[in-house]
Amino acid sequence: MRVSRSLTIKQMAMVSAVAMLFIFIFIVVQLFHFVQQSRYDTASQMEKIAHSVRLPLSAAILKADIPQAEYILNQIQPSGIISRADVVLPNQFQALRQSFAPERPIPMWIARLFELPVQISLPLYSLERPANPQPLAYLVLQADSWRMYKFIISTISTLLTTYLLLALVLSVAISWSINRLIVHPIRKIARELDNLSPQNAAGHQLKLPALHHDDEIGMLVRSYNRNQQMMMPRHLTQEHDLLNAFEDQQFAIWLQPQVNMRTQEVVSAEVFLRMQQPDGSWVLPDGLIERIENCGLMYMIGNWVLEESCRVLADWQSRGITMPLSVNVSAQQLLHKKMGSSLLEMLARYRIQSGTLILEVTESHRIDDPTEAVNILRPLRKAGVRIALDDFGMGYASLRHLHHLKALPVDILKLDKSFIDGLPEDSAMAGVIIGMAKTLGLKLVAEGIENQAQCDWLLNEGVTLAQGYLFSRAMTLKEFDAQYLSTPQQ
Image 1 (cartoon, rainbow, N blue to C red):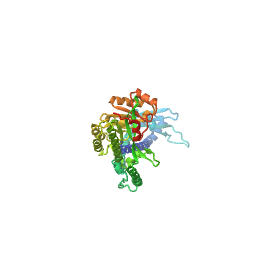
Image 2 (tube, rainbow, N blue to C red):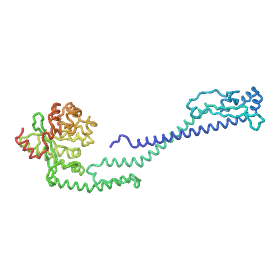
Image 3 (cartoon, rainbow, N blue to C red):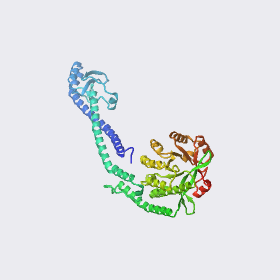
Image 4 (tube, rainbow, N blue to C red):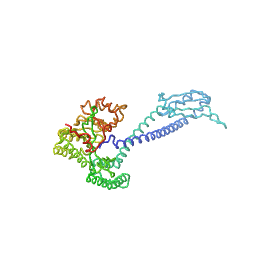
């Protein structure tokens, strides 16, 4: 079992993303709060300084004593806060200015965003105030913007460091908790189900994980076990029906001819499984193969099909007929531990001539371990069994495991009907597969031919072997014998 992206990584990414979003909001809110508090503190300090010189400065302004006013401004103690002090007349005329620190530029967006520099304005009155006093002038103090800028940068750095560390701690803590409570139990369940053999799948029960008796994982396990119990009677019924049908000889093999489209000669045949219905007809019911596999009867029934096919070949050979016979083998049957030895024993017992039995491995049925399939097929091929890859182009092996194709002991590729149906208009995929077969030196058989236009296109591409309704449907052994083997073929 493989996963392309672990749930642990996804949850870590999700927790981190959510944490970063809220951290950004918190940083912005707290930054503006701290800056606003710093602005208020700065303004308060500047007001205290302004009040300390207000009376003497007012007297100097009233007397128009400019040197005294300048002297008083020079006595202001900036304490690293004030960068400039101005005396502005009511008409906005700047009468005096005293700079305490050189102006250093700060980013314009910082100045606009945080309304820098911080300023206060204090009115200056005459010492004897009338009923409605009018200010003589205004004392304007301006804070050092560079000092405030450094405070903002320092605050941002501190908040980022603190909250990012907090986000890391929270992400790890939350992810670890989710991992222990959710990911580990789900992974354990998935591994148990993935390692479950088809024979043991029916009636299988999952163990309820600890600490999950009353949550959604416990509900999932109980639902699975309940469904398994419900399926068990159905499975037993299906198995009983299939075994009864097998014992009552309600299964049979039929043959469909494979022809040389140039000469119209029948050169081989494919075996099809048929089951007798209550009305006496013989068909392959929908889902029959899947039901056989689910009941664990695929090897038994598949082995019977191989046995019957060997009997047919032995009978033909006794009559001097050397026509090959193709038999479909599912992945479940192919990978059975007794498959290789059982078939080799049949070949020896029926003395099957080399090259007359063809195993069609159905590619669209998933084979998890191609190496194991190769190890089973190679001894069979050495024993004279030819190997065909059925439904080529339909299974994931065509793309995902294409590099295994050269290692597979394959003699024949069968072009799937889905690629034939679009011919001759839609021929791109069929052309690719035909070219691949030629490159690999493999024989190609087209299946599902239904009209002459398909036949003509394939012949033009060099494909001569085919089967389909254009030539004949599957038929009983007796009908096949009467129609195609009435005269022994050498």
